[in-house]
Image 1: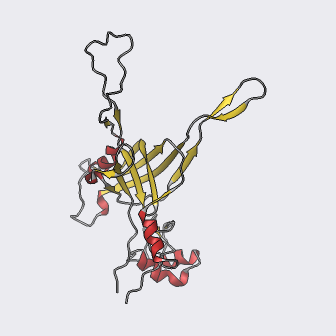
Image 2: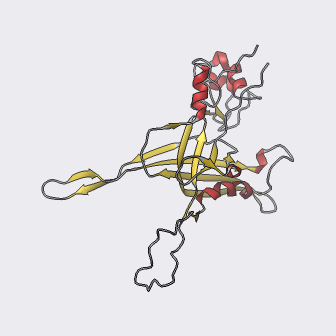
Image 3: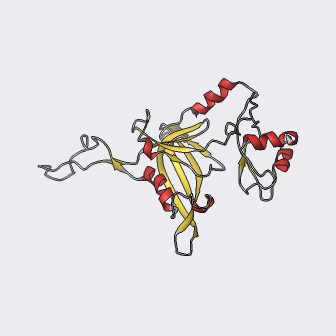
Length: 256
């Protein structure tokens, strides 16, 4: 019998400044817990035209697209002795890398001389910007710049080390484009309809006290709860973790 499939975990990847391809693979962050929701916001740049006659609204810019999500990191969630860090900030600092500005290559070549100064012998100031970043989760892909990061330390050890943290992340891109589908979408399509695997459909968070049979029944697929549990890699179907994300459309693949 094949190993049950696992829900794919989201990633943050560094991109070239022109967003053409990924770079610095050692900077890739694989999140510990997938976010429960992704909020995408589109906004056009509109200005009021108060010329002669009635006021009108005019489109004046390319617009923006923003992505907001929350990530959790918890060093106590690992089995005994396997946690990769004793302080959760050792994990979250890898996410903070994407909001830290760094010098742009050749960024000073086009900088103007300081206004009002003699300009003689003075070098233009270097330009800085945070790395371009790609958020990738299954078929969902968003390329942009991290414009906001808020970290909340939630739980401390007796020695005062933070052990759990939530990160509220916001990414933005200075344009409005059609949705970009990650490579997982192509892989899912190649298997054909009726062969959905975990991680390719919207996920349902388990409420407190939920069981796999009850969660499946509430979605009208109660008869298939065992194969759904297997496809999601759930070992204890009668004791789901509050907030645990489950793909109720997934079915275990049958091997020969």
